[in-house]
Image (cartoon, rainbow, N blue to C red; front, side, top):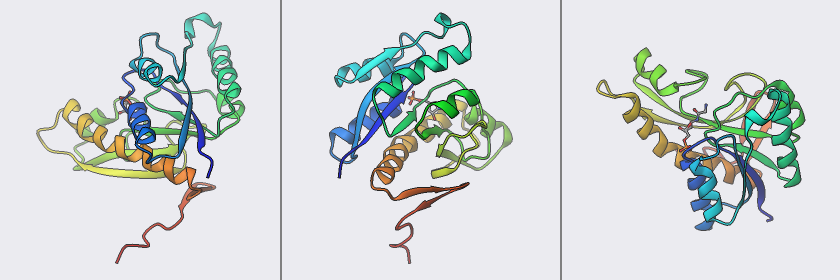
Length: 209
Ligand code: GAR
């Protein structure tokens, strides 16, 4: 089976990108990483891409007259690589409907909460402030809302009374690094199918009692 071609957008550390790269290198993920693009010049994600010999670009938002022009620059790069999916891995900007309508491929995101709880910024802090006992992470398709698109996979972690934003973020991140490669592998096998608001997972629960 030919591998799924993906582009990644990332703003910072890029540990989710690294988890994807590691899974590809270990032969566990049938994905071809074509290009990594960042809105931050010194994003570690760009270094991680370069270390793998993957094309990588910094697109400076300040060089564009408005958000739409910046987003068009991103779209132009992504289109050159003829990818099947765009993967957001810690990309800390909210797209305009213009981007979603013109990017031409489905866009995936990972968010550090159990959506639809705690969308937007500082999801881990929101969970702690609310006092929930469980939080986690969500891989979902992007739609025109904020963190509101169809959910592919979620993973749950406990929230302890002594947690800080950092300790919870770290616990969630460990799950993120498992969840994003799993979601991508399901997509590459054609086993995650978006049907309107819901995502059907083929074979799900077959090994359960
Ligand atoms: C991850 O926790 C990801 O879920 C979050 O940013 C972090 C990026 O880490 N994304 C969002 O909050 C998007 N709204 P990374 O750069 O090490 O992958």
